Image 1 (tube, rainbow, N blue to C red):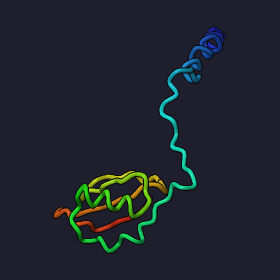
Image 2 (image 1 turned 90 degrees about the horizontal axis):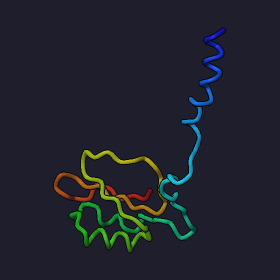
Image 3 (image 1 turned 120 degrees about the horizontal axis):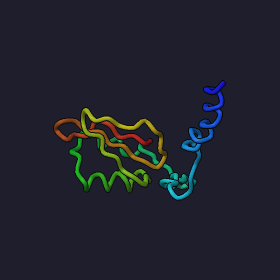
Image 4 (image 1 turned 90 degrees about the vertical axis):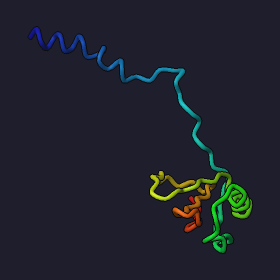
Length: 102
């Protein structure tokens, strides 16, 4: 009986750590608009070219993407889909082997 009373007394204290508090809301979520699209179809002719910053800027402009993500060989990438992101993968020789949106 004494043990049950102690558990009932301490339970609210244990749950207090689970409640949300103000102030630490974290970063704002990314909001996608209608214009946040990427189309990589028109840049597939750049496969095999050397990955450079200048080429990355050209790819961004040609695809309509807002952000560019370089994907080096043997690197882990998040699998989240972002319609405004262009992903450019390249091999060990810096040759582009994949251009995709998402």
